[in-house]
Image 1 (tube, one colour):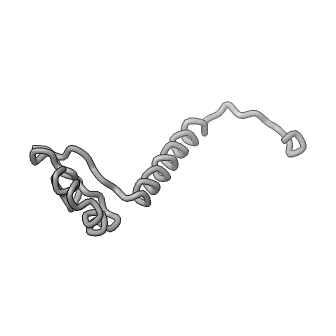
Image 2 (cartoon, rainbow, N blue to C red):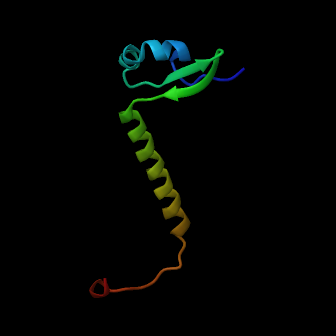
Image 3 (tube, rainbow, N blue to C red):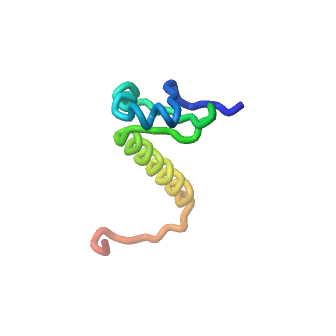
Length: 81
């Protein structure tokens, strides 16, 4: 059985019929869109998507900093910058 990672679930048919009301009901939470009782897609708000993208960028930055923390380093003065 597949795990559904949302508190709200709707069928594809229901989503087609009531898109606006489902978005309003979801508020800022993800909605699992089911096809034959299996999650086919997740619907998230634009704000939620933007937060996820910012979080992923932060994780990538952290990984890059850790990767580069051991060098090699180049010495420069402020005047050279």
